Image (tube, rainbow, N blue to C red; front, top):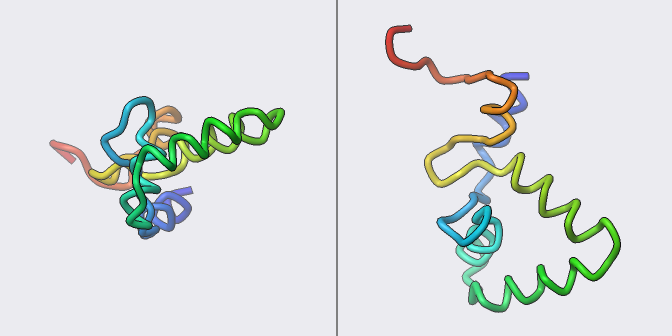
Length: 86
């Protein structure tokens, strides 16, 4: 499982410092797009049953934050980087 999280951390796509989960801000920063347009696109994708919301939730769980933390990794209580005192 550690190699999976390491693989995710190597991804150039990161969650940004955005409103809810930072997914739109991260996508906009990576592609150089306006974050408002990305947010509108995501909101439009929410009109599709389960696709928009499901994709957003999966991205929120799996994309690393700007500091390298991954929400799913925190939820299952695993970390690949040694913490203080280790």
